[in-house]
Image (tube, rainbow, N blue to C red; front, side, top):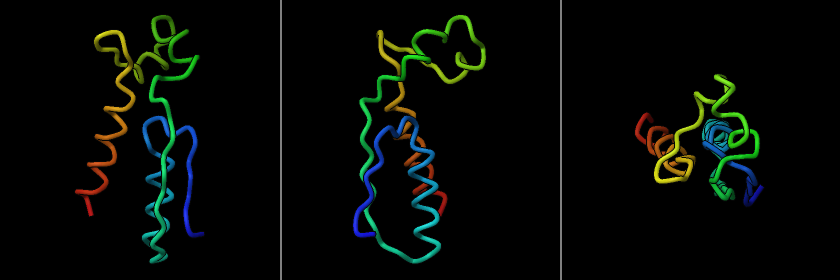
Length: 81
C-alpha cells in the first residue's frame, strides 16, 4: 500500500499494531488516523454503571480524554524503539 487510512482510531492500538508490522516488513507507509476522539456511544452510556467500560473512560472538563490517551500511546510507541 502507498497510504493507509484508519477510521475509528480511539486510543490508537490498531494503528500502532499496523505500524509495527509495517516497520518489521520495512515498508514505509504513512497511516492517517481519523476519529472525533469523543468516545463512542457505549462509553458515554455505560461508563458509570459498567466497571469494564468505566476503566477506559476518563472525563475532564466535560469531555473524554480519548485524544489525550491516543497521543500518549503514540508517544510511548515512538520512544520505545
